[in-house]
Amino acid sequence: MLTVFPRILRLLGPPLFLAFGVTVGGGLMGALGHWLAGQSSQADASQIAFRIRIWAVAVAIGGALTALENFERSLSTKALVELAKGGLTLMAAYAGAEFGYLLVRWWMLP
Image (tube, rainbow, N blue to C red; front, side, top):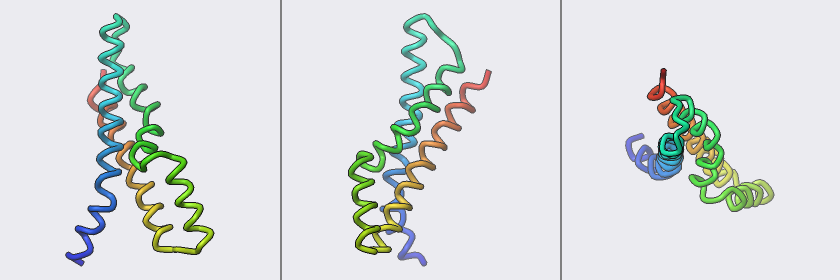
């Protein structure tokens, strides 16, 4: 069990933390842009973070079309291990984006 955990972390860590960083950074930088433009509102950061989640997932999995092509290729060749890796990577990226959004929303509570 202990030898499997580092392999799983190497597979799922980068997409999770990359999507998390893109979501948090995008939400906060968007809020800074609103503030510099004189349209300050605390809800702006969480709205921007909510909207940027899908792009954070696309960035984390290395581009949406490439990842979908690999997913389709593993479906057609019945490579279940590669299919599972792709699905886990996609879920980790989505989880990172969702955690980032929840953090920004919690931080920007009125």
